[in-house]
Image 1 (tube, rainbow, N blue to C red):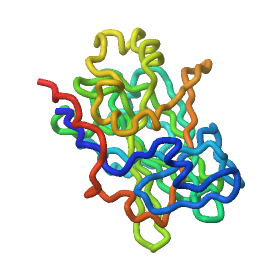
Image 2: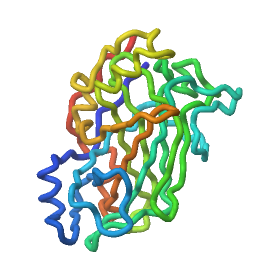
Image 3: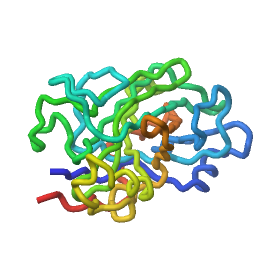
Image 4: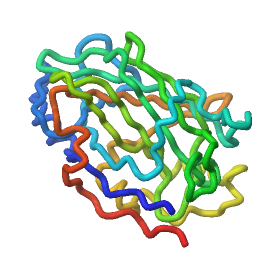
Length: 268
């Protein structure tokens, strides 16, 4: 059932990215390389980019993207029946930047879509999962003038053959006037997973069979897509900022070969 495709796009290490960007504390320049760039700081700057930038790889959309048209911040409820997905609450704060030769600035009106499985490893609205008609843990938000969106969800569970992840898709318009789409996946450290998977409702499923180190898709740059949630009174919160070179037409090109091996074996 869970047979995510191989990743697409190109992956650059931090040193390669800095060389590509020509960034030495001065103006930022970007060549079209099929990558996005993200600041490692927790909030999107309103002026020039932070010096510490790394290239962010595109990764596979996977087989379970559904364009539900759910414009909402809290993606836990299922509008089909009013139920709320169980699990440890996670507040996700995203910043989206547009990068060009003069620097970077918040990107307004970009559509940020996320989707992931529930605490037991099940996706909504998927025939193979027996969940057609349900819409839990899916939704999108449009970035504000500061290039920011916020989601409230739960920490995902696991399913066989994949490390724990959240899917993200950003849609906007490129500098050529055509649709521009960046798709990737977000991950968690093994330490965090060990912490929350021992609590209900996750604990009943046991220990995951796939870690970040053994996941074929994570191998294609997943270490650059790690979320670092911190504890709050309600659960957890995490910040992540992605910069997009809207002149790079290779971003979103599914025909681009990607690094990394295939995903783990599908479940029986």
